[in-house]
Length: 400
Length: 87
Image (cartoon, rainbow over all chains, first blue to last red; front, side, top):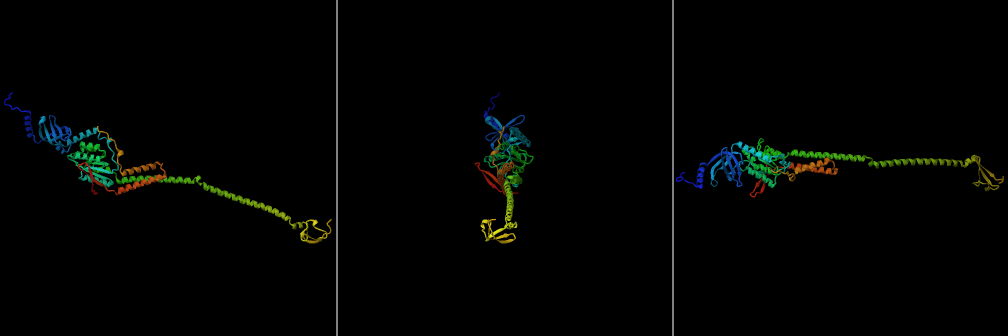
């Protein structure tokens, strides 16, 4: 061991030398590897490890660069990290100070998608039981999408045609690139906080997997899950499926489809109302008709006809009585007639003329009729009326 | 495990259309049940007709309203009218 002509460094000195060498040699490099131990510190700085089968490299990305990431780095993702090597003297570590991370091809994103989907499914975020029903007649519809582009115009056109008696509340957000996921999360939370919508449509038009990536981010999925307002996710085209689609209360294959799903068709609604009215009218007509029948049968019944019946009975009694009276009168009349006849016959029989005819005479003195001999004296002059005429006579004697 | 969510159906606001259709359903149910006296049935029917008429009017006269949210630095929101041109 030769010590005399060997330079002895202090730890600081040697570290500084190492730092100098490394930092000047590796000023701008790109490193490919698999992410692990990804930690987003509360400070906003991202710490991670890049590894492959044989070695690993610590990495850090500072907060201001993290904001530019169009996706959230996950363990297991294969990425290319671009940056420089720095030496952290205090801990004697070297690390990659990354300014940018990008997935190693679309395949990486696809794998990340699968990983997250599995993880959230296991947690139960996609369970049907947790999905809320979409209100049938929402009054206020919140729309979280880009303010430019055809999406909002299409949605507005379709809703205006189908059921215009609603209010659309547009919350403009970025729908791709860095920061988009955060804006979408803010929008969902704000709608929930202010309670100004009955349902939300969250989505965007078609694009590549990278373009749609914000709708695959974990924070967006969790915000959708936590929303008390029902959410329709409407991302991309029919064939695009995002994590948002799985966790939302309803998936629409496109934003236009969402517009069709969120409101009913107004003529259909009106038809439903009309049907109710016709049914109600029919029932009511039936009730009225039944009531009419009931009243009619009551009218027909004996109970109500009694007065008329009574009257008829009285009429009959009257008629009967009348007949009786007539009969009685006739009878009485006949009786009187008989009596009269009898009397008149007797009277007739008593007729002096008849008496005379039978041979008797009427003796008159001074035009008075003498019915007793004591009324006569001797020598009285009397008229004797015979049936065939009178004679004059003188009384000779009162003794026989 | 994610916490289970309770369906907060009862605290939802119902739109007038929703209330109207529900009321019409109720009216028809009551009428079908048959225990409503005729006078009340007529009143119910009139109520139903009124509901339908007002919904019809609302729908026929309605124009889509669009509002845009702006947030200020304090986190308060304001709504501004957006002009909507039907294409």
